[in-house]
Length: 385
Ligand SMILES: [Fe+2]
Image (cartoon, rainbow, N blue to C red; front, side, top):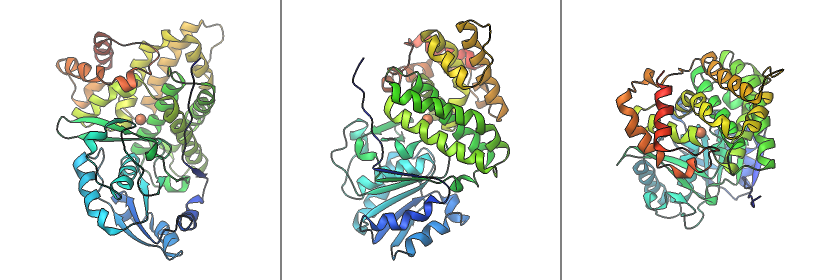
């Protein structure tokens, strides 16, 4: 048994209406002038106007940056960083999906000092902390609000790369399900599946422990109960709250135990074929699980039980097979394709994708079953249908 670590934001605030505290919490950091990094969609549709009011009520002035694009490139962050360094902000607030939250983390650093982002790709390479920052998600999936990862696209080789540092953990995360009510069904489905993948992969990660397993299992139960409902009726408040909590729990488990081969194999699909992160994870999930189950049948039986699958009179192996079939149906139920060919991937693309995925040792080393390049190719071929 090894020694495990557990990290989280300084403060987590959860529940309907919790966003109303953001101004008061900002004042605790002596904030007078704040940069809000927000999704353009939320600003343009006035969905987060009340958040700005909470700042104004505390006499806090703010600027809004709404220029973050999905899977943002390093250059965009470095450009914004050089613009904001002169503005003397005393707090950064990120409000949006995973790309916005990851960007806010890095901008808290770049608002304080200049940094070549490519030089800090990897773990523990950010030299010192930046400005205080708060994160509040408007999707239920990435878990970015509780992780110390930030993922960007390197436009030089079109590969997604991660910066991992404890300085990327926020002082405060506010997880308010009301902010997810306007999320469209396709985004609800993709981000919700990302959360389910976080929970399953961190539960079976070689770095997991009892604390993370308990957290991940509860995430699996909540997401299984409510993701389909949230996709089909976005106004279902209970389903939205379950997804907020499930995503948060999955994010905590991911932050501490890591994710594995689903994420590693999803990266080339996302990078080259521009498939959104949650969708690429969803497509690959059943095929990677098909490969993984024999590594730890007991763990996958525990997950099958959390998913309330019928396991009477079945062997562990049969339960694991049921689990894989259930995942394929689950992905279909929420309108996500179960084959990579839908995104234009062909057999000819597989060797290059497998070679690229095999280099993501940061994730593959967590996976409960080792993968050779040939194993990865075979999983990709299976995922072509
Ligand atoms: Fe993810």
